[in-house]
Image (tube, rainbow over all chains, first blue to last red; front, side, top):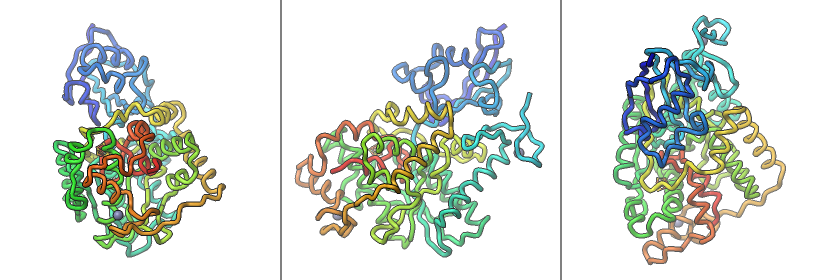
Length: 99
Length: 348
Ligand code: SF4
Ligand SMILES: [Zn+2]
Ligand SMILES: [Zn+2]
């Protein structure tokens, strides 16, 4: 069963996904992990592939990009292994842009 | 399974893991602790005197936006008795600075702080757009950094401020410590770790109240308090993300956030142990700004522009360092460039 999510990009990470802050998406994966979501984002919605590495590194986000799941810091959850459910809101905030 | 907030009397669920100490807190407790940590730094170092006029170097970026807000909150809560003013620099970069200045304008209204904007064009006769048109995109950040530093000093002086505060955070300082360590530059090591510099009477004292505050916590603070900031890259910015020191710090932080503070502490202890002979500072013969040479760096660079000697004031060898060293600036630019310290660590 696919999973519907709301993705929110801010702090400059929106520049990497077509300058659009909010993305309503449907993942073709049942209960994806955050790590799977990141890989999917890399494949499907990162528009500027020259700058992929500003968002993704290895199987996770680049250090310096903060992740919230339903407004909760992923560091209090399971980080990469956090399981997402239908209707979840996942926020990515870059701390790497600007000063 | 929600984790409870670690504050004793609080019954809310934790939503943030503080970088500073790894504790799990709710948004309300996070905000309170963040502010009190900054207060602790300020009071432990006697950073301000009652009645002082303090200029906040405001770029519209996250660090200076949070700094301005927190200064305002703490000044009221702990009755510092400070007069706070915002000071912004307009480098004259189309499509970049115009936008960030709008964000500073908003701070001015929302935080009810007076704002002064000074432009390179007025101060030096050249805007950054004009400089880049003349010299190309090679040493632009060197010009920009030298100009900005002086512009902030001059602006603060003109406004009658006795101190200038900038938004440098723990990540920035750790990064600069690392770079100066790698270069073995002890004099700069000292300057970059000091919470306050220039209080020896020479130039206007500069302070960094967010020195022990993590970048992640700053961004989280801005988010939970709905502070809007600006983060577009300067159109002339070099490849600042791929800066080695910055990358290293961010990776380290993911594994063990405290390591950032350890780097700052080690920088501090190396800096105080070694007796460092800093150059004797005099005055620029042209503009009167503090300088160890006859002409200050800014005047030398302007001279080069006006007489078409474009390498005046720029050592050839440092070009690559200038490029990568340009990471981020908290001193009135949100350009993604840390000129204040970075340019300092490049010799002319
Ligand atoms: S990146 Fe920063 S220092 Fe460089 S030109 Fe732009 S505003 Fe100036
Ligand atoms: Zn709480
Ligand atoms: Zn001068």
